[in-house]
Image 1 (cartoon, rainbow, N blue to C red):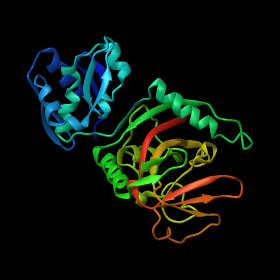
Image 2 (cartoon, rainbow, N blue to C red):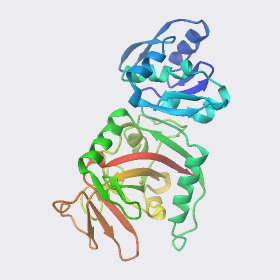
Image 3 (cartoon, rainbow, N blue to C red):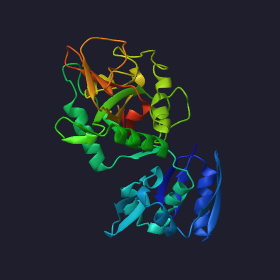
Length: 316
């Protein structure tokens, strides 16, 4: 697996440094195409005719703003992911940025991370602080927040799950497809993380970044399968999520359809329980919320597709 970061001025950074140099050199020499080799095959990248890509895959683009105020359209993969900040500082042209779009058409949507924008950091930090229980321990210092750019497969399965559940009343937010909730998920990260996911099977956080949430890996690191039934667990309480993963803890912010990693979660129709249970989630419900006597809540969802990792929180 390779991960890509946009460096500006035709330069790309990848795990495979040789590949990175190949693309940079081809750009400098004005070549029309360059062949790159990744673990899943070889690809010819057209460095010149990038505008055609936008016409063929408009649904996969997003708009970012250059320093001159012009809108540039670029694919929503990691590379251009783009760090709007990097784009602004480099003054890169749309053609250069479109190399990512070309990669996307070639099914090279590779999951990776980028440093979160200032707005994203503020949003995550605010949610983390508001939901920290100071009676348990002082709020920890966050050292880094990364935006997680999942693969097309993980993103699309989450979207399909939301659409299948349909519009569901959501507390304080009217209705949303799948009743999406942003929650915290505590896990461990054993690698010397430098901004991109490692390939170690034992590194839970990097596995979630690479492949999304998978039920088959539950409890492999901790042995803890949860007290409220089988499924993926997330919570609105940042202190609770921080308690998982031991000394190697990180938090993922996640979107849940029925968020550490801060994931998104599809909650859908919710079953409420107040006692531990191993029973399956009630028929007609998409998730289970455990309301503990100490005020802590945990949401449990039974399907991988109901969890979408959004941000990675690392601590000092």
